[in-house]
Length: 260
Image 1 (tube, one colour):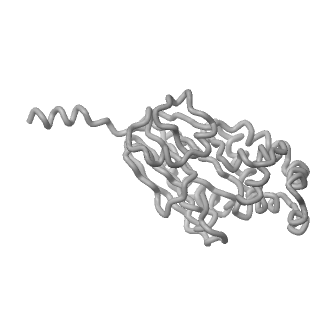
Image 2 (cartoon, rainbow, N blue to C red):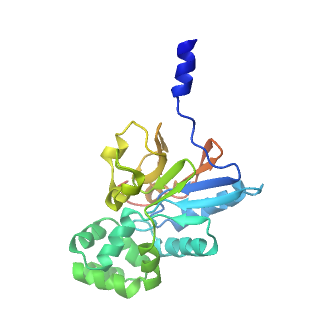
């Protein structure tokens, strides 16, 4: 009996969202405007009963790989402009586009291999013209075709957001480092040190970045990147009080391998 009481006291309480709020964290979209519109319709239906403050958090990687990165960026920009309860985080793919626009050679090379071609085609770049360009030419295409307002929006995105007992990031956290000392490079890119960590963080972590077939539910984190650009399954996590539930789209599959 004594042991049982001690065990209960040592168990951490479940993370909670304030009772007057419902939060939807939305995973990596990667240019799938069709999946985004489907998800937004599901969220509208889910909140139709009303009565609670609704917060949306996009976990980053709006762009690359899928067919309509421009449409996704414009839709999310409009949502953020319309409500202070809509937030978008910076993912590693947004970082790549921004650095490529500044002419960083390494970023241009990775951007070219990581779905940047599809992004620029969605901004009206001719496919044959893209294929003819060298890395410096790709930078010119970005500056000539991606509106400055879009680049400014992406450049201003934060790396994390704390809501009650949760912290939401694109990729993850560096174990053992306080939240206010985390580096952008880890918040946008980290994998193994974070994914392999079984201990607690300062807050329960919601993230994307690493593709899994189903939501990756662990004792200290939940990953919700289900590879929408390829699978057609965009996942959102609804947080309400101490409950969690998932919304998932069922859009047509895209092309290309599942690559994080």
